[in-house]
Amino acid sequence: MNKKAAKGFHMPHVFIILLLIMLFVVLLSYMVPSGSYQRITESSTGMTVIDPDTFQYVENETPITFMDYFEAIYTGFVNGATIMGTLFISSGMIYLLEVSGAFGAGIHAILERTKGREFSVVCIFYTIFVIFGVLGYGEAAYPFYPLAVTIGFALGYDRMVGTGLAIVGSTVGFTSGLMNTFTTGVAQQIVGLPLFSGIGFRAVGLVAFYIIGLVGLYAYCRKIKKDPELSLVKEEYMSRKQEDHLEGMEQMTLSRILGLIVFLGTIIVQGFGCIRLGWSFPQIAAIYIIMGILLSLIFRIGPSKASQLFCQGAVRVFPAAFAVGLAQSVVVLMNQACIMDTIVHGMSMLLENKSAILALLIIFVFVTLFNFLVVSGSGKAVIVMPILQPLGKILDINQQVLVLTYQYGDGITNSFWPGSSLVQLAMCGVDYGSWIKFCWKIYLAFIVSAFILVMIAYGIGYGPF
Image (cartoon, rainbow, N blue to C red):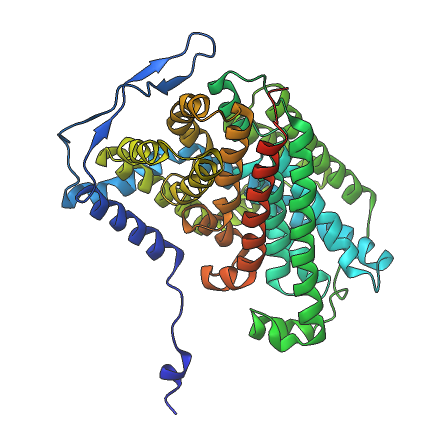
């Protein structure tokens, strides 16, 4: 038999998928007419939003040309520089802790205390990533994804378990919107609701999504432990099962304890800074640089050696950083095509004269599908919410319910559609095809439960406070 023929179809590389999405946007630009809303700056919030009564079709004076397609890649890299730079810096600094043996020693200590209860460790780290999501970490949590994969390996599971606990956990927390400034916060500001109001009902959603994600992880862990042949990364898993996961792991020392304390302190400061001080990527990068300096002192790593190790750690995230640039290139082309406003206007026309429940379903599906093209949660909010606000009043739908519908539609598929999930998967070393096989049932359950929650919220009159 021809071995090449037996291999069958393989999912293209992350870069190829993103380039194809860019090409899809180019094709859309010649199929969907250009349109535009006027933008206004709200005096109360200082945010620039669209005026829903000003849509008009326009002549696109800068249609996408052959060269524009390729130039968008460079522009996307420029636009994504803050995220890419933070990924390089944080990953390089975290690598100093990895080579010190502190992570290995910490994992070793955990494994010695949880023999036979490996899934309890999965639960612990899954919960940590849920908390990251609740705090709205988003891309700021990416540097921790490779660590999650390492933990999965150490527990005797495959690469997909570590990937799942990190990505599914982050998705659960981010979608719940308890303290998510980028979706809930921005959307509530636009429609005039108090910041993070209605947190009680969103906490119920968090519990529901948490359980669904955990059950999905447990089912997969149990399945591959029972039959390793069912692993989605079978070849790698079978070879790793022959290894002793505790062999070669370092023992805990005072310097390693101090290093882990510095790392934990960095995470806490990052969370506090982002939530209470309005920090963004420049400040996050800065505290990782400070962490790297402290780690170099603790482990007595010379400046030149620390610089070499930093470069080695930064290089590991090159595919993910490159994918960030390409994902931004999609946004560049969308903006040049001038079709985002047209798509939103079409949705608003579709909602006219519809019942409240049907309108909520259309909104939920629209935001979910629109997320394929526009990844940014805050970016979608400033485009979509000014349209939904007056429609909600016409259809007698509470603004809090509209925010909830938007929040769920945006959050769930952030790690499903390729635009953003490919960056996350690149951090974990997992291909998109294997990820979809792993997560589709979990995400289908997320979507169904999310809309049930929206209907309950509408039914109980989920209000602004």
